[in-house]
Amino acid sequence: MINNKTTVRQFLSLSIYYDLVPYQSEIISRGKPEFIAGHKVPDTLDSIEYGQRLDLQDMKTDGDMIFMPCEILFKMNKSDILSLTIFEVSALAKWVVSELNRMTEREMVSFYYKPDPEEIKAGINNLGLGAFGIIDNIVKSRPVYTHEDVLSLSCYKVYAMQLIDFKNRMYEKKLRAEYSKKK
Image 1 (tube, rainbow, N blue to C red):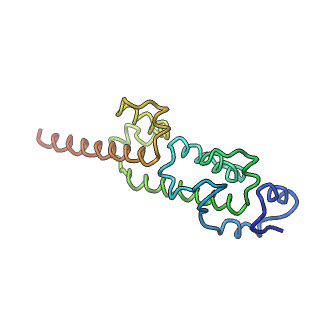
Image 2: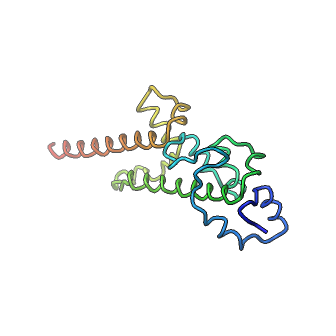
């Protein structure tokens, strides 16, 4: 029923009438494709625009997983995606999710911070600024950029800017603590 040539269109049609769960492990067992419809798949998602990353992070449904990576990364339309094989589209989606997880994990490790009791009392855990907070912080610390500019920067550049800002804040905090010890 499903083979290496099964298109997304065929797969979606079959999924209405048949239980395709037995095929899921085969579909998602594929590694990252090198090309999708002539488009080179990047080695990592670090080089894509930050706005594209935010869009990819909005994938929630199976349909999103099938269509959004190709739409966002390669500007493909749905009709072109429907003609791709389900195996290559699923492999791309699986790789995109693993890359998003890798990037998130890198950020969690790089920006780990245990707040002081005073910071907790002041509400640091309630800030929850998310992506807009990241963008706004970059714009405030680097006035040459607008919010739209930040969305167009590579994910790695946004990460590097955040890392510099984080290290500077940690240094300033330690320096203030040292000065307060002298008083």
